[in-house]
Image (tube, rainbow, N blue to C red):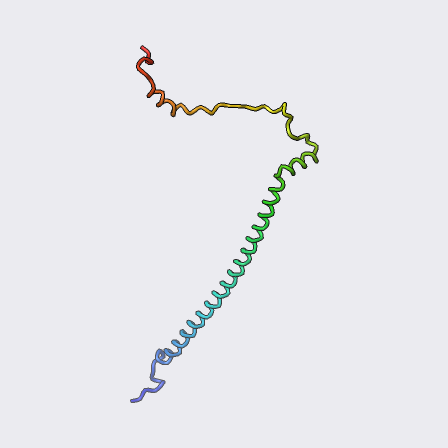
Length: 127
């Protein structure tokens, strides 16, 4: 006896439709995920480009400020600025210069103690 649609169960009738729906959802979900990922990559690319431009600008400003600092710390600029402010600063007179000649700093005691002990003679001992 041939089976007709009325005698088939509901699972058999909706099975292929359900499979087609799941395949469509899977493909649609993958497509939405792909588009979202591409948008995110584009946004990250824009952010990277913007930050690289900021970095270049900061490097340029840093170089300009380093040049300005070197200019401000130059002896000629400092002398000119001191004369503008009437600070009375200048080179000292030769009579005001005191030259200090010093001996080299003594070595630490820990380093000299073993050498002294090696050079001691029996006659140097106290009774």
